[in-house]
Every structure is written in C-alpha cells, then in structure tokens.
Length: 317
Picture 1 (cartoon, helix red, strand yellow):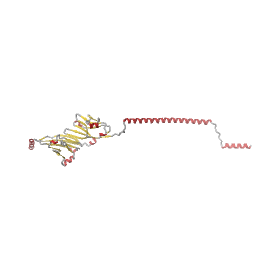
Picture 2 (picture 1 turned 120 degrees about the vertical axis):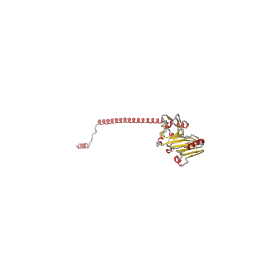
Picture 3 (picture 1 turned 90 degrees about the vertical axis):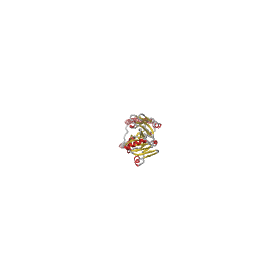
C-alpha cells in the first residue's frame, strides 16, 4: 500500500495523471461489424494501445501502426481488426461470439495516461440469415424493420452505397440526395407506428443488400438489415388498353360464333321439317294414282294354252 501511494505521489510530482476509465456497453449480433471510437487525434498522441481481455492487440507509436503481432491475436481475430489512421479508432468486422469481452484503449502522453473500456457482447441468432432475407414480387411493397435502436440511436440506412434514410429520435430524412431520388423517387416512406421503412412499387433494381449503421456516442454498429430479392413479373409487352381491347374482341367473336351456331341449327331444323312435309305429300299423291287407274289383266301360261285350244277347235269346225 505504501508503495502504491508513493508511486501516485511521484506521478503527481512529474505531472502524470491517471484518468479513470469509462466503460461503454455495446450489444451486437453475430456477423455485425463495430467501430470503437477513441475521440482523439492519434497523430497528437505519443502512444496508443488497444487491449482485448488484457491482451494487447494493437499499438500506435507516431507513424507506426501495428495490429495483431502475435499468434494468439491472429488466431482470435484472423485479420478482422482495422485501425483508423487518423483517430486510432478500432473496427472489428464480422464479429463472432468468441470476440465478446472487454476492449480497452490506453492513450499515453508525456503528462497523462487515459483509458476507455468497451464491454462488447456478441449475440448469436441462429435464424438471422433466414430472417433478413425477403422475397417479393415486382410491384408489391416491402417493409424494412429498423428495430428498437431508432428510439435511442441515430440510424443511417444504405443501399448500394447510397444513403436512403437518416433517422434520429427527433427527426428523419428520407431520400435526401439526388442518387436516392433518382432510384427511389416517391417510393419510400417511414411508418412511425411500427418504425419500418416502406418501399412501395418495388422493382427488380431494388434487389440487393440494405445495410444499417447504428451510431452511438462512442461506437457505431454496421449491420446487414435485409437482403431483398424482387421477382420479375412476366410482361406481355401490351398496354392495359390493348389487353382490354383484345378481351372485348374475343368476347364479341365468341358471341358471334354462338349466334351463328344457333342460326345454323334453326335453319337446319326448318329444312328438315320442310323435307318431311314434301315427302308426305308425294306419298299421298302416289297412293291416289294407284286407286284411280284400271287394273291390268294378268295373263297366265294356263290362259295362253286355253286360248290356243279354242282357236284350234274353231279351225277344225
């Protein structure tokens, strides 16, 4: 105890002060990226070091930047650490659950030592890949759920590198630039009751990855919000008026065809009735002729023989 007290007094005499570290809680999901801010200019500091669970992972001394210099660090992060050259802020990409823990930045100047601690909790959501994928048909609407962070944080929503929405607790800006207006003109609106961003009359060009940036005072989280697939609806190439005209034409053609069939059947029936009447009249006429004419004598072989005998006897006499 006497040694520690003596050390503090010596540092005070030398003008070196130890600043009490603040701790910031950061809750992220597996696959997110997070940036932890130093809030200082690294070029103005003598030395800056980042630690993960008390194990040094980066060091900045003047112009020199060193990240993951030992095997253990490389195994834990595998190239997923990035340093901002200007501020020394640390970005961890594609977070995994084993990267949960305490991240501490120590800033060492000639007259002071300051530190800041981030308690990062990485949560695994097994169904997340299925949850973020959405498929809709061309012409429909889709809702992008922004989550509860909109109530406490600043949200920036990007598509293909274009900022399409900026939402804070007090106000929101939808399509505040020319690129967004060119792509989504009058098709984006914020539902204040559900906190969702609605895209109406979706097009195939709206397919892609929508990324959300969640800004806190000491950190920012980068998250894939939605992977959208817009299914194209086959186009006949005809306008609605042309399609309506074709439908009307088909209906009229069918009506004319049905009418022609009825007319044909009616004519056929009348013709059959007329032919039946004619056949009846001809039959009656033939029957009348058979009744009026005299009967033709029938000459039999026996009759011929009798006549011949009669003629022979007449000659003999």
